[in-house]
Picture: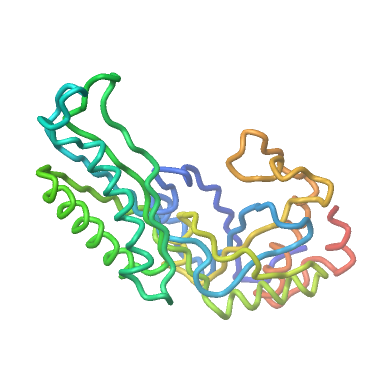
Length: 280
């Protein structure tokens, strides 16, 4: 089972995908030197023996934001003497939910989520400041810039109308994962030739993934390996769950797909169809 002459396969074991991001560091250290194509998979709670993949966007860009609202604190019994950052923050939260529906084209896809709201530390005092933070998720970088502009405008105008001030900060996360069409169709065909169920259902995802930087540098494909048996509880295959339990039955399926990619791209037979089927 030898590779054709003048070819090689590089296995990339990347740390820190969840942060701060290992892909870019590995690229800087030469992981893609002399590499023509790059392929990656992620397990997902799709049905076992299925491959979910599509050309174009498959995972989103994430932008984190933080909003600090500065008002005037005081006693809860005398709100007329305060500029209440909690009240203003509540208005801001509602205003941010208009961005996707009223500032973007219906053809664009985006999510704006406020995930933290903090202010004060006692029951009888209106605080002088409040913090809101959350994420923006998009597939198009220009859409992200439009949303950031609208977030800042809504925050500052809302705060000004109540006599408060605010600071807004953004932190750009990973770029969106964009699969090139030709390589993606190749992976779909390879998986179908193995009698696996191939689907675009459930994609794209609004989660983020730094494999995007590999695909910015090289052709390739990022796809999802199904791990859920019919009898499984949803929580045992759900990603980022404290009940997560990887389904070992999925491992040989992933191996078979990677071997199939090698054989197709190198136009060789490393393993016969029968041998590939034997990986169980």
